[in-house]
Image (cartoon, rainbow, N blue to C red; front, side):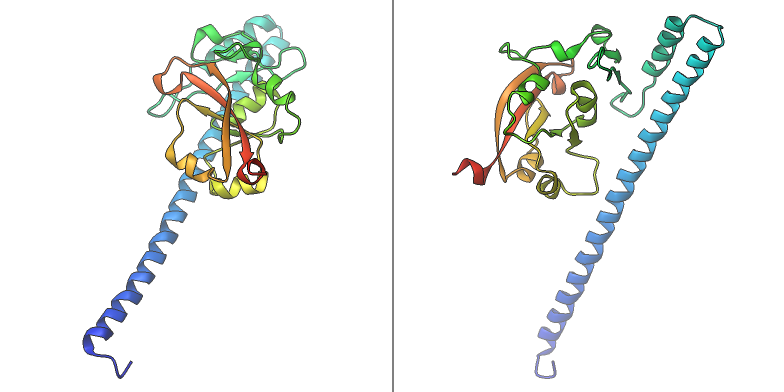
Length: 231
């Protein structure tokens, strides 16, 4: 250090301070990201708890004989269906998960989907539903990855994980869970493609869904590890 010129000393000090600043900034960004995710998780949890209380309240009225059970059920569904929040009018959906009503939609912002068993829907090429496609390919890991993965798990009975809202980076998440399928809306985000660069994504089905321009197609992809594809 004594043999360095004044300029070189200042340059070294600036370089060290820059590294420290970048490290501190990165840590702050990660903390902020985790905070935002936790706040969203808490908000969604509270909304789900509120919906459960609405269901419980109407169920109690039906059991007390204050109204017929079908009426209580429908009033509860109407109240939950009216719940909206955020700039995109986010909502809660209710789907059947029993042996007799698996995949039936009970609460949804679009009336045409109400009481419809969407497991029986086919894609634009006439291919079978997601559950049938996955079940017909036992070689692929029976795990879905993608947007609204939790809703798809309820509708199809296939385990699923979301590609967002996690404190774990997506590229690390797929290495841990190794999903065999990806479900996404319309076109891929570049960030998603970068995170899934270890896989080849083969589109196998394409379903018409919501009426929104950015979410009017639901696409199912087979996730093929590049190492496997190259063999």
